Amino acid sequence: EFMNRMQENFLPIERLMSYYRCAIMEVETKFRVLNEQFSLQYDRNPIETIKTRVKSFDGILKKVKRKQIPFSLESIEENINDIAGVRVVCSFPEDIYLLAECLLQQDDIRLIEKKDYIKNPKPSGYRSLHLIVEVPIFLENEKRPMKVEVQLRTIAMDFWASLEHKLRYKKEIPEAEAVQMAEELTECANVIADWDKKMGEIRNRIERYSEEKDESLPAIGLA
Ligand code: 0O2
Image (cartoon, rainbow, N blue to C red; front, side):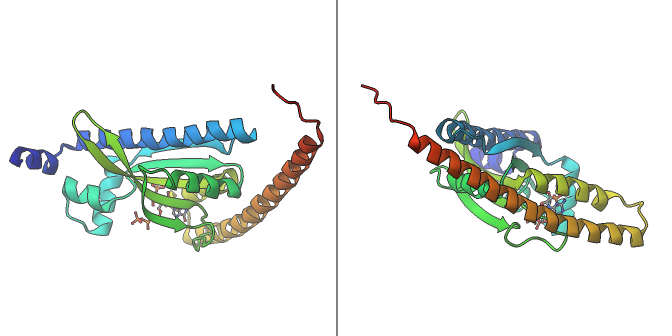
């Protein structure tokens, strides 16, 4: 038992990072399976793209400093929730909630935290649904729960976030101009949210029409 505890407490960083990569694979596969099922059942792909990343060592160090947590692997694993990141980009806002619900009802997924920045956008205008989940990875002799941050957003929200991210990290821009651009970006975020909603409504109208048409077709019995 002592040896086990030693191993757990002094897990080398490379091994921990590899566990996070495994957790990403698990979560990514779950979304790919859902996408496959939806394309068969409803003839549509709710997912446009999936992007994944493991936080860089530099990024982890910055967060350790910002959150003022002890610098040990144990504390990093306990306190930093976004080392493993999976970003799911959908065409429509409705699909975001559908996918989140499907993921969360799976019996090996444990929800740790949900932040709905679509219903409650950040002051910047940032929108996305964030889920911190715990997923087990199955190793040679153990089952290990790992935390993964899932960000679900539409194509439009993703487009917006990448531009805003650029502005956020460009420190050379004069203060006044940066403020101006940030304000314009907040306006863009509102316009984008409107269009996302409208496009979703049009999609639903189109789908309703095709359902009616399908019903009007004579049923073909498969004896
Ligand atoms: P990066 O460079 O994208 O990795 P915590 O809950 O303590 O872990 P926090 O900051 O409360 O941290 O988490 P939050 O705000 O729920 O989510 C943080 C992540 O969401 C960010 O990661 C971004 O990816 C994204 N995000 C949140 N707000 C904004 C925003 O206003 N603009 C953009 N473009 N992205 C945002 P990092 O690690 O902060 O940054």
